Image (cartoon, rainbow, N blue to C red):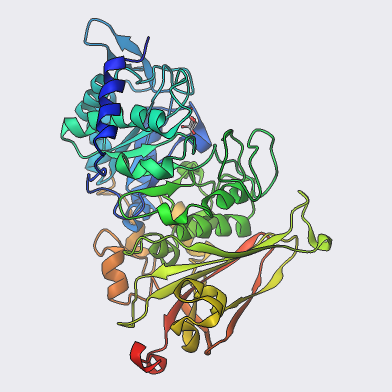
Length: 505
Ligand code: GAL
């Protein structure tokens, strides 16, 4: 089927007269949820979605903010030529039809996402939406979806520059808007044609890389771009490691803003091939740069330590911070060759960024992330001069002359025992309202359904601020012993007595 030239022309015309921002009021903080692809690929069914949705509620994940349950590729069975070419749902996988699934998910207080592709076929070779944007947007709105992930396979060559790619994606954006239903629009063109330049005019997020793989730093030729020019990647590929993708975002952190985000791809936490320190690091890194946090594990077999990572509200609060600013990389050093890991890598890096102030009228809180890619635990240093370089180079930032609380955002991580108790408590009522709700016995777990992260931060909720482990004095240095392939993640808060007014400095 050919791409409808009329749609393309209309989209290009819109581009020429100046495109409007997506302006759908969604994703003012990065979207959170779950998608089946990483763990289950095409093995999708109504039971999978409904069971997972139930567990997301019962394990307290919904109340931490994981709202979107997203069905990825492989759900359709062609188009109905005698009914306006409407997509046909595979009734073997979804015997009650898709609307029933959407209703079940909505009844649990969750939101429903689906997947299509701006091409002839999806990546799994099911029907794509190119040329059928209006028909498919209407179908999705009729089903009652709240989120569309829109992929890039089989795009028939309508790519190669920003105008062509953006026009192709804009056509679906316009069709979604025309339905009148608020639908979060998540672009998945793997960073091709610089979507961070135009994505915010169309959508709520854009993937910045090829597909993630459950791996810390192994090179794979199918994800070819690494190193200093990783951002300029003409072959996004797949099998991209966590550190590969994290390198790519370093160059485009300023593109993240409320309503539109750099998407580093779905989480691998709990998939099984990385260790606990690596999953802690992965979750922290994605949170600090304001990536959407879309769980990619099979929640039906979640392990306690992974539930505990995904439940760390103090880290999620960084991701959901009301300022919506990404942390930025301040330095990266290739370390000496005696500490390389099995993949020949050894590098350490420090990131920091603004968080909304929870204490001082004058100065923001700050997040600091130390990432250790060495083969052994490493003592890492972060100077206030480097942390606050955006407010003044070479130590001239006023914050360098202040004292700060250093709050460890992993200090209060839920114990494995508590996580195991939550997982092992019989819950399978199939109905969350009568099932066990982890938030009631999770010993003070944060509940973002009742108190948004923004409100909780302003109220100084101890569940969101981590624990003070030390203070750092003017011109001082934060020192942390960081696990192999792990992170230290801190929230800095100005110490009130040390806060002086700007004009006194
Ligand atoms: C890829 C996409 C993945 C997944 C897959 C489905 O292109 O990046 O996240 O959606 O297609 O086939």
